[in-house]
Length: 206
Image (tube, rainbow, N blue to C red; front, side):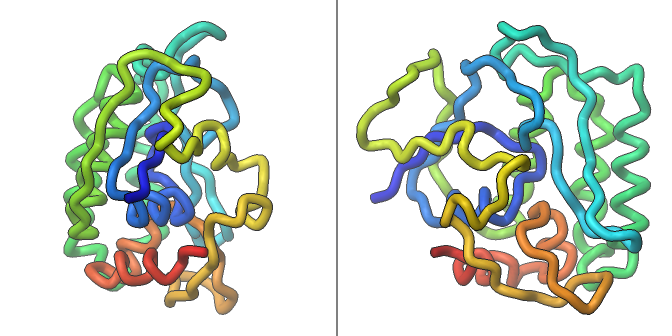
């Protein structure tokens, strides 16, 4: 039985969701201090102009646990993300099926980043028809239970997925371009493959 501990990512990458699919039990680290330049508040989609980052603006200081990080709603980020989503995937095969699932969550104005991330994750796992045991940490432990595969601060955008050896790209038909772009947000895979997305994730594991 594989068990992992990892942070809740915002519309996580295929590498991230591949690890979730491959695990029986997921412990989400919410007590570790928030760090910048991570997937906790950003994801990457494929637009007509190439890879595009979507970032959730947040408020925190250098000692703010992830569970206490708030979203800065003074910026029009949700409208921007919805617009980018429509531009990127409006003609994707499964856009009509699943667009409302994402839009409803974006419109909620969650006070905390953790609530946004968890609701997006719950919805994505439901679409993928994947049922997993998910627990939130209650305190930060630098060295977690030895039975847990510690992926905290390991799946990061500033390093390529090839350096981690967790993800093996399995191509699927994307909305733009003729060259497959690996390891985008789970939203790309869902919009392009729908119910087949979980099969692609399974085949993308090392």
